[in-house]
Image (tube, rainbow, N blue to C red; front, side):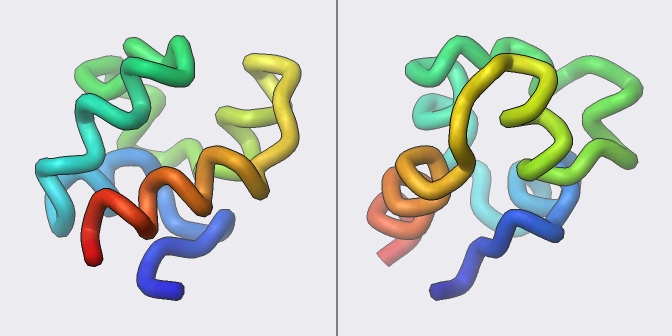
Amino acid sequence: MKITKDMTIGEVVRNYPSTIQVLGSFGMGCVGCPSAQAETLEEACQVHGMQPDELLAALNKAVQ
C-alpha cells in the first residue's frame, strides 16, 4: 500500500495527482482547502463520518 491513513491530504495530492478525482468522489472537496495540508486522511474521514479503509483502497487502486 502506497497511501496510508497517516498521510496528509496535501501530501497525497502532491505525490499522486490522480487521487484528486477519487477524493472528490468520496465527497472530499477539501483538496484545495488550507487545512488539507496538515489534515491526515484518517482525520478527514472522521470529519466526513466515514471509515478510512474504503477510501484508502480506492486511492491506492488509482495510483497502481
